[in-house]
Length: 287
Image (cartoon, rainbow, N blue to C red):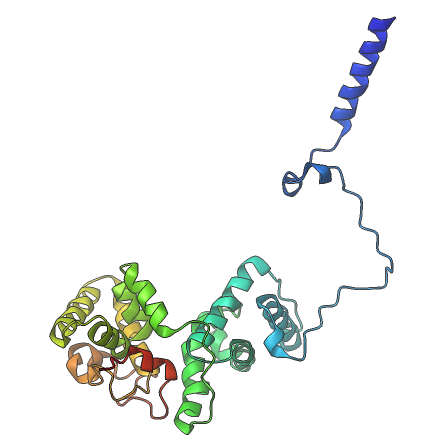
């Protein structure tokens, strides 16, 4: 009889294990939740999740901008944009970082950039083929030159919102052995001022280094050649510069390369006028 009872108990245990649903991957971190698959109880079925965006744009997060983009997309196209927060959040974070790196209040100017993108959506679609967060990101420089730089020349814009200093960003890249990245991200005057006035290299050494760098890019593939344009474009768009900056005559010093890009829509024969970013003062050597 005892044998029969033990067999019955063993059978019951095995039967219970076999009939228990296999836990989801997301539930494996907490075994106590592995069998809690019941539908959540909604106290009021008529209540819906509130996705209303705050009237104060400075409170918006990356997710808020994904929702805002989707709302604008629906209003303009009468169709739904499929949100993918995992990837879309990173794009709008990148856009916000671009704004703050230029001293702009990132939430305010990210929203302005989205609005501008929808206003210019037909142009973007014509050039890029489709209109998504991944697409509009490529038009940041266009937006900056069209919407920000005129205000810089008028001295009618506040560019004091920095999340990290330019000098810290440059030093970090320098410590990682990414000197070429500094020129691509910041252009010739900023990068050269850092190496000459902060690092103490001679202007002759720095000039020779730039020439070698640009020559190497020119001899590379299409992607390498495009980086020359990025260096020169950033040299234009990061102006105006303080008079104490090095290589302000970069157009003449590197004419071999600059003359090739003089017909680009972002090109300027002279730097922008107006007030330089206050952050630039950190790059000037003080006696």
